[in-house]
Image (cartoon, rainbow, N blue to C red; front, top):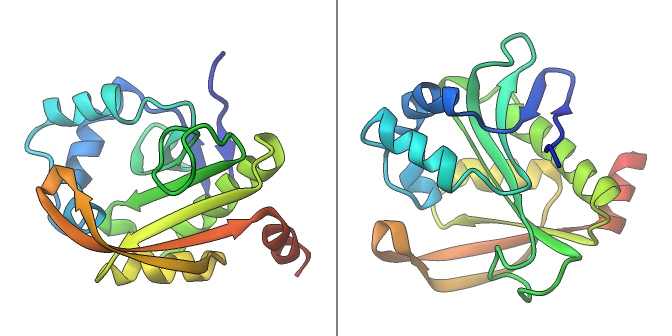
Length: 188
């Protein structure tokens, strides 16, 4: 089954392609991006291609692209389904964890909240999820503000969370959106 493409007023959320490797490298080599999200900066286009093929290959992993430039990835957004998150039981198919990042030149334009709202819609309406989680590491204020703006509610703080790709531990803030809350936000 081919993964669907999701669209918003300004964005296209589409499957990653090998041809996105150069664009991914352009943004993922920036030390302001990966380390804040728990992964090291990319060192070359080949590494970025490996990430596309081996990490951004889940059933709900999407490249974020501007509607007027659909072939150029500017960020990533995904829902990690059952077995892909430590925030809920591995066999729970009613929950997912959302993750996202966007290239620094696109910060401050509201693209992440716009993409996240569409992925929430997809998760609750199309995938019939009841809860979607989202986390950020202590100090990642941009992610914290984005999650608050989207409507995620703080649930708990997890100290000493392993960050395997950076060989360290950090404090994680876990937030959640329930389907009922999402429906309330749609009504406003």
